[in-house]
Length: 231
Image 1 (cartoon, one colour):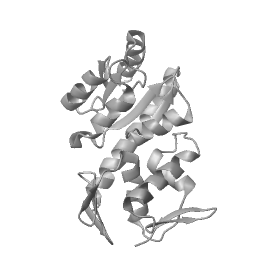
Image 2 (cartoon, helix red, strand yellow):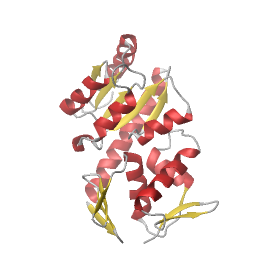
Image 3 (cartoon, one colour):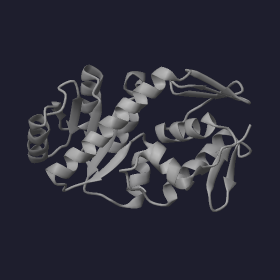
Image 4 (spheres, one colour):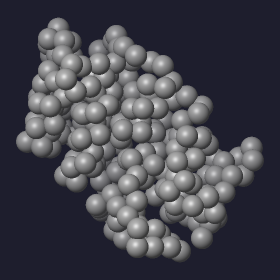
């Protein structure tokens, strides 16, 4: 049985999915909350502050991508793990999900035991993230960049930069050890998690967008190896 302290918000417009997955999660000892649309999910997330949100992509009124973007605007929910639970598995859909601030992309249908294993891994990442933030410095200053880890804010000089969650975490990783070359495999593991399978273009898209925002001179490509941050 898992600790009852773990709160999971399950969002899907199909009652059968809510019932089936919700039953299995409760059976494992989680506190489970359910909603059937994105707008209610945003309010419920504010109310219960879940550790994990399982979020369907295809929903009426507000889809999962839009819902995730709105949830990530709430500072209280920055550490909440968001996993898209969907029948869509195309690369472009996955990239959109990660750019919106998602942490994982789970394709359904999925067997209960497999889902349980993925959830355990995601909750472990939540614990590690909170632990790391508690031990590390809150404000990081490198060259002309200032990063506030608690508020998820980045400043370049006097200009505020808006970074989606994965871009922020990628920058935080690279900047944590200037001049260290992070391999693509290490970046995927540290930012997306070892259990997440994403398309090869995902990291390239995020690096390109980071360069556009903070300046190409700060992120260097080491051909055949990976990327590094330079001041």
